[in-house]
Length: 456
Image 1 (spheres, rainbow, N blue to C red):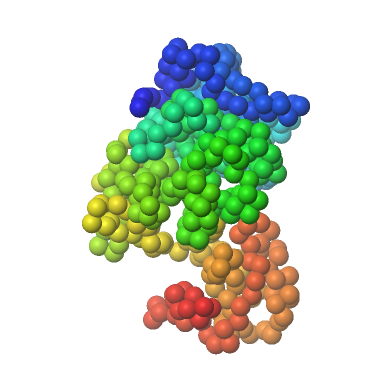
Image 2 (cartoon, rainbow, N blue to C red):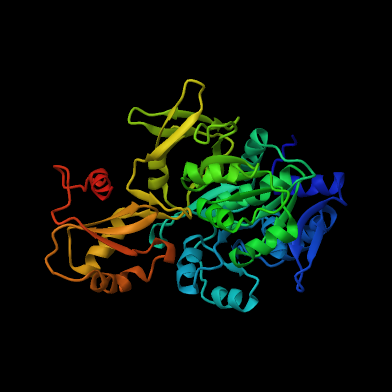
């Protein structure tokens, strides 16, 4: 298994060793598959890096749409010495702009050049980038106002790809279908770098609308997904004829769904990782989905309160961008305090139990920060005895003793203004009334486990 120092090392060595080997597959304007060899990819990266080096920019924000041009831009911008920040291209401009400003971006790349220009016109960084060359920034997958820019490097990302490949290697005969957003570290490492670093071909998908067509067109052997996407693929039976390995990450997944996929003769592995660790920390490599082998360059310990602690010297973040206090709270003596709860079994494999912090992780990987979220709900309703809980995969507003009698429809309508700033997948869709005050601790905190028991 080859180990690559950084993006430039990956591109240059692969182009030198196997210039005619397929690196990327994509669809051209007519929908026909297009092959990009390592020699072609390297040439495009080198040419674009030379252009960027003459512009005088310091930090480029990339609206990472997963196209070949986007992949070239990421590799080229890092090679040119820019600080790079990857953003979800689906974010509206009014949501994206504060994120760009938060990382001192002074230029923007997007497939839609008019959009890139419109965003650039509003950028006026007050300071030079805090990290510069080799820094690659991802935003944590929380709700918008709680997203934090995490500073990784192309070195740490390549180390993460090597870690995962050591446990689950691919071959040049494999095709990895990239269907997850490159703005999410799981999608970037496990949907792109994993395949490229193993010499496999990476097929760049065209988004959820084309997911069935992409499986039929590219006929992948491997894919990385979140549980919600896996559920969709299983329902459509859209795995194709050659699929032999599915890596599931970013959120918990039911055993019933995993077993259903396995009945098709497909190997299924669960992954555990964080943005702060450049993605993967552990992968399930055996029959037990939830018993995960620790990546070779990481060490996992369990704190006295059951918290998962990770020592990942080659993959750990540089910190939260311009936020030393949050960085110091998360990383102590070089060890990341994850906020997740788990245990190590007798064979040293990691089992993840849940979250210690007040965060709900949805099936699509979105994290909902409950204190902020519930404050927004309470403000919209003018009610304090409410809580948001995850029940049967859906966010439910649980009401205790309300001061105002309103129907469920009236409550949902009242929530609409507060929910407008949240992604559609993290909005309240159902109301549950307990008929009594919410159970709380002596300190006044909601006892969510009691609510879950009552909901059944």
